[in-house]
Image 1 (cartoon, rainbow, N blue to C red):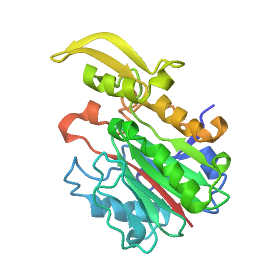
Image 2: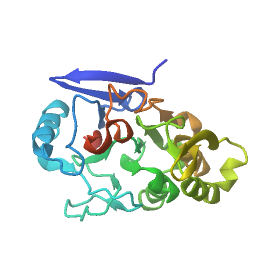
Image 3: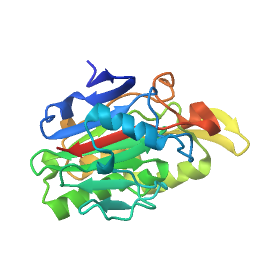
Image 4: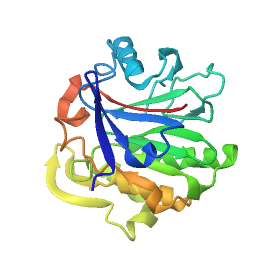
Length: 260
């Protein structure tokens, strides 16, 4: 059974996780489909137009939207008074109402994290570089240390992203993962050699979703509270934007979370 619901409002389609919908009186969230995008590649020329559209659909004021300039870092900003510098940031956390945290995605992993007890949200962009830097763990540790969250109360939903069968990397990247996650590799087939080659040699498959799940469990999140959409953006390129499928003119999906 699918653990998400696809909704359509006006001409915007978006995914919502059934688990997070249990808290819809307190939380608004969405992961947009291909009928909506937050701009062409890095130029985001239609950003204002689409933010106006999504604001109407989700009842979010445009002035309430906080979207960082993502750089595949492990930098996380806590949103309080709205004056925060969002340059070179790939994760947002807040316990304030009416702060819409927005992350743009085109194959990378979107971690939508929520503590329904303490009313804290985190929206995290974890590409392969962010995964190597353990940005998901960093976000949860901030929630634990700064907001008194308990790991067993925290829910994390994993949005549509590129999956292992399509996430092909060169040997140098595979070695980064082997070094960083050697303990995980002992018990899980995270890295797999393929018979495919490019100009740099043999290609390897990386299960970055599983790595993020294991990192969250390592901090004490319950496996039942880690909900994966199980959607591959390559396999579902007709529904979701994908950098690898669309090439240099790729567009982006958007993950949004807001406490009401």
